[in-house]
Image (cartoon, rainbow, N blue to C red):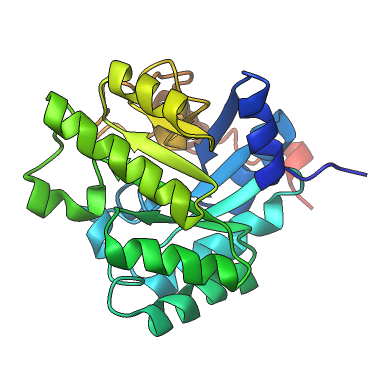
Length: 266
């Protein structure tokens, strides 16, 4: 029997001073391979707006699209925790509609949801979501859905005052009941303090080496998406070249009459 990664699993990893892995996935087969590889948390990130759908930003994707990808990914996962990003405007209008959208993600296979930001409304929504029976992952630092307010992809928490605000936000999310918090584009010394000061796991997304977990966009890790690569994204593969060269070889075999061959016809 497979031991499913849960909120308790991640808390235990933090308490044991160990680390866990998290990657995005947007389709059934990728999710299946990541799960088989041993990834602990699979995130249906709203980054798929750019990497899978070709939109300009995460703000362009809607709840219906995220639901389709959540359903596909969840079918491919057995062990990992499945977390879905709640997309722009799907949880910030009012709590009743937010809970309906969140519940829909769980019905389609998510084990938890991720909410960006920290204010009175988000804290209240986290409490309501948990009361509904759905775990919540927080997300502070650079929050992509608010990039128009922030002014672009800008590192957060660089001053002492800004770092204090992030720490207060992290503690507030913890108090509201979040089971973990993504820290995005935060100086690692700030992330280290936050990780030490709260009891729930922190997840580094460009927040240095001292968090409890680490997340990357799978297309960055695979070397598939090349329109933009953040500094913290390490390339472990070169799928762009693999796909391009495979397609070129296919074209050439067709032109040479080598495809299909005798073993590939009925």
